[in-house]
Length: 307
Image (cartoon, rainbow, N blue to C red; front, side, top):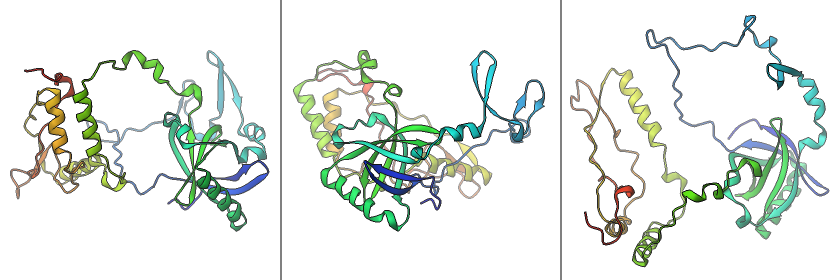
């Protein structure tokens, strides 16, 4: 959890104003690996310098912001002028309406989310009342807020004792499914195929547990980097077996039969996709849990087809 809030203001519903703070829901404790660009010959890190075509390299204190109103013609906009455009009203999250959760389309989510908390004891009562009313009525709030210099459309939803603010895309920023209507399949399916598919979905249904899922690619990248730092030789694995080619009904039957097993691979497995040889282990690690190749949908025939 971030120790510093990223925004402070007021959560406003009609004449009710609740002082709140916003914290990003994204944790800073991630294990992302960032690769730097290097010169291939000497492995020195590539540098990026801000330059002017007339005066060469420019320092930050000589850089201003501007808008290109015609080709190569700019009007400079001073930060003070931007500040004067903002009013106290811009520091408020103004709830415009409440909607039923089922009326919200996830297509509009931008991926940016914040926890809202009361900003001081004075806001605790009003915050708790609003939260409990939204839970009791099963409603989300739709609001607007000036965030990072832009007016944003946001959704407010109660979650485990806190209000979560989700930044949304505006209507014109979302590509509608109708734009890809010609890409949507119109193929008929046999009743037997549909029944098997429904059985597979039902057998694979469980409560969502985020702890079951892990960033396996980053784990593999960690292992790769550790092996290379240790001076181990990276050996490419043999070519994987191609996808099995069977008919659709048989693929569904096999999937239903195997759906009782775990859906997520174990994190304890050695790195798949390469092996690292060392003097102590000349053949590198061996995957103790090899997996059969999946059925390729592009090569699966209809029920009754033979190959």
